[in-house]
Length: 220
Image 1 (cartoon, rainbow, N blue to C red):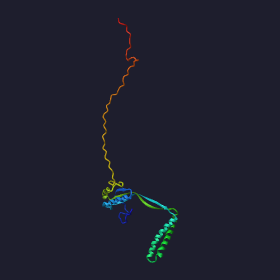
Image 2: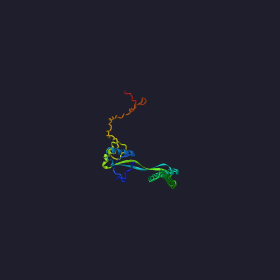
Image 3: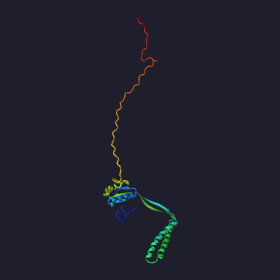
Image 4: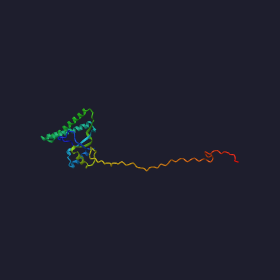
């Protein structure tokens, strides 16, 4: 990621502006700014800001005395080479100036590297590289140009997440659902309740409610 020039008046100040888009990687944010530049937008009003910063230290290997000595010798020889070039400009031959400078530089670099490693007491027996990693990248634009920037980015496509109202993210609108009237069913006719049939007397039983038979004398 290129660093901001120290002569830029915005260097060292908090970025200001309205967030118009958010991307998950720096390449996507860079692509969006390149698109703005291709569309002749004033990209000087745009700033890329890394969010959710995390410091990451990647371990590259283990430190040992041979590795420390070899690395120190290389650094010392590199420094001695430039000293030999300077001495060669003021006179002398290559064997008299450059070669001794390389040997002296390599020896001095090896000695200092081994001494420095021994003074650590084995507290850091590994080599690593540190890097600051951002979780997402936001594009800020000055408020007076934020609306125009959103309109231009709408032509790029929605590779990032929405950073605010009007950000270049296409969302499919769902059609509004109108309330449907409840379904009407035809009325159900109520039938009268059926009464159970009357019980018929069995032939073995006398009919109910019949007065008993009386013997009357014959009339003369």
